[in-house]
Image 1 (spheres, protein in one colour):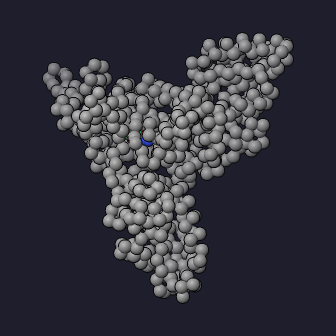
Image 2 (tube, rainbow, N blue to C red; image 1 turned 135 degrees about the vertical axis):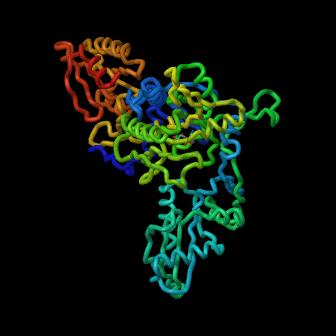
Length: 574
Ligand code: GAP
């Protein structure tokens, strides 16, 4: 039986990564030189899978936006593309806030030479008090939080960027609590930062009362007493430096002199390229507000802790849309895009419990945003929690206003369909800065989610590892096999292969292979995620039929060789 894909908790990232390497989906960048942290290459199947996902976004967001659905006011959704450069005038990043604000406070461990984000340092704080273990939970918590405020240092620290890391650390921490008769060890509904509290009794210490809490190390403790805090890597104190601001943008120099005046940045997002070309797009096309502008391409962030395969990389690709609309209509468009983006990810194979739409709480919003939601996926390394796949943000007029102020160029839009009706029957018009709804998706993260969701193990099949890609995304669309490499079968297979490649080869690979047993050839196709295999056998030569094998069920049926193209056309949606 195939494993339940419900929660992704049973899938092993090691197995998924091994298959990705073995079948040429993802390779470590510069692997023969030992790799380079935070950079990944795509092999033949991965490159085609990624292209298919990018293409699906392009088709459904730009060419036929939202599959032709109507917007909130019943109008057609209109979008156009741009393709902007990775290196922009550095003033773009001053206006966008990335030069001043795209910073993470970082801590260096001078002994192990490792660096981590200050807000990802968790501590295990333990204190002993005279008394009993029968204290009220609230009292226990109050006492230990007061101890921490008074300077109680953590006995252990660990870097945690998600629920799964914290859960791991708590598991390890529990071992330290073994000598205590811990009476209550559970996640209590405390403040959001405090993850677990233990309340126990230490027999060896004459009945002292043990309090333990796992929570982030307070920022003030790191700033004022970092050498006293134990290193999350060595466990020893004395090596942590005070936090320093660290800008995530990669710097480069333009021209040969390489002075401070020549500094430029690799873009950390594709979105700003859209805002700075807003006026050109309006002036050179017939678009009218509301309309969207899409941009896809590489972005770069000097992530401090690149991790979890391609999830947090230093070079990655984004697919972003800025949808410009009248301020009065922006709340409706925000809801429209939020819901459509969730539906889109579901339509390409992420349907089920592993996908969720999470609306940000008020205190999570940027100062200019009146609404932000994330489409989140439960990756095996975040399970049971979720990781962000795409953010949909109502950005108000923040970006256009910033660029208008910094560039001195007016970016207001003159809307001839608004304003009072004039005696001549036309409208007076209204000048305004459009509001913007931004669905911002990560292409590499999308590919990773698709890889994780598609990966299925079924020990009962000769090919226990199957990639159940949605046919639209599958990098191999079909395979044609002669059952044996003789008796006229290879010739028929070759002819069918040529026909299918001519019709479907632009959308993905059409494979053919005459070597090895048919079972091994099917297994290879299952691992590559090929949805349909057509086999030419002895009967084909007599009655012009072939077997078609379905990847997901392993079931086979016979169809006429003349109807193979139509069969594929219907199932691939091409
Ligand atoms: N313009 C808005 C913006 O860039 P973001 O949430 O920082 O928003 C959008 O990025 C998407 O880009 C994320 O949801 C994620 O899918 C992807 N992304 C961001 N940083 C990434 C990284 N270091 N590696 C891979 N993908 C990343």
